[in-house]
Image (cartoon, rainbow, N blue to C red; front, side, top):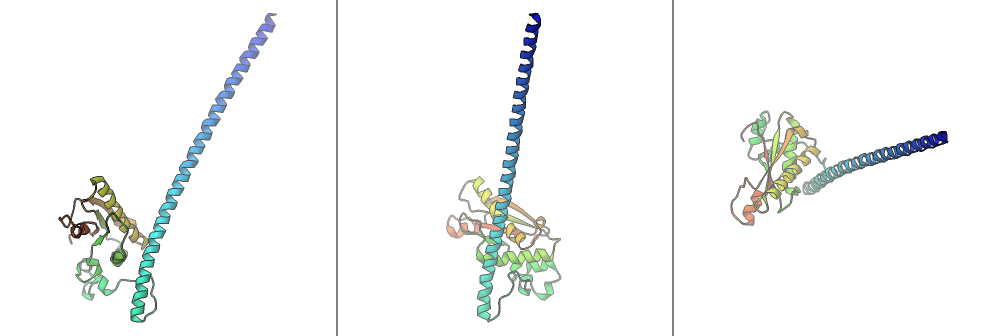
Amino acid sequence: MNKVIIAFSVAVLVGGCASQGQQVAEVEQRDLFEETQRDAELERAEADKQAQIQQEQEELKRQLEEQQRRQELTDSEEMGMPDEPVIRPLSDNNFGTGDNRDDPWMQLNEPDSLLAKRSIFYDFDRYDIKEEFVPVIEAHANFLLEHPDFKIKIEGNCDDRGSREYNLALGQRRAESVKRAMTLLGVDENQIETVSFGAERPLAFGQDEANWSQNRRSDIVYPDQSL
């Protein structure tokens, strides 16, 4: 009788241990499944983010090319000339006079060249680049391609409407939009630094559209020398 009781107790104990072991295994399997699911979700989120960035870059490039194509078509029609490539070498007017071509700093200071223009202006609450400023961006992009040792800082600015935090974020988006355009044109992103000053560096101080429009801008700055 004692042997029967002992055998029964052992069987119950073994069964309990087996049941507990199975529960532990199930918990571990469930944790592993959840971890795998989390990893998969993170991978999908990262893939979606990269796809969105690529899409934005492709769209910006398309817009720049379309703007340039329309301008070239207009120029060609006026001059009776065939179409030229979208991205063209800079003309002497872009780089300055012939006497200045060997001196990059003199090129940047040539009053009649596109390189002398350092500001990109925006509509209210926008950071997309207007067609009229595409040639300025292309001129500086080509200059940086010609001089890979040069670096620039793009400073984003806003008018004084809106909160400080909002203006800083908008100013950063404006600076980044110019940087993206230049990198799409082939400039090494390591040549370009971006910063936002929000509404802290106004050019005009009046409280009307004429003054506000002067403060909604990105400034292209060559930090190695005061220009």
